[in-house]
Image (cartoon, rainbow, N blue to C red):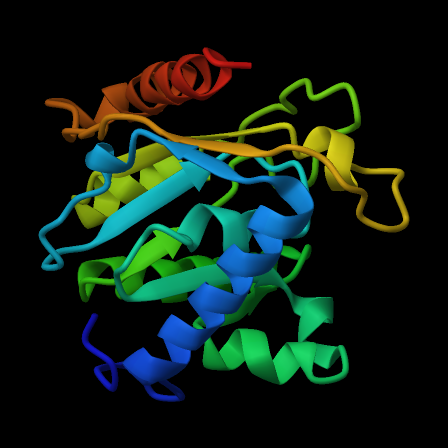
Length: 220
């Protein structure tokens, strides 16, 4: 990790020792309360140079923590803009690399530009294609194609990730997290070349979005 490298006017990566402490605390409690296990760690790129887009399914508010416990790279996150007003949490997530995304078109476009710039400058960006948490039945919600489009435009690979068991921990409709067993599965990278013809972009993106869904849903 390259702590201190600036990638935007108002953000600098946190110091490595701070990230290490946060990762250690996160792993301890995740192991204690949710018996977390990891598979496919060998699929996480070891080369720290170049951008990477991580695309997991979304089951709990804890997903960003779980997914990134084994990813030792410069991390950025899209986070719900309301979370930045929460006591202490807002400052913490901003410090650790989060930037806000709202539900209106203007805010979404601004956040997308920040995300694209981060990827082009070598960051590892976490995006949840579902856009919201799943329900307790664990079924995937519709995947938005923005993650695939962004990876294609930034010319970076996608690391698909499956979160399994989180739907019984803190899904939509659950006010508080519960004890349970969670597994994080990292799949082989997907590289998305640009289509030969511009008119093929939409079908090209849809094709890879379906592939992403198939990969993530395969262990569920």
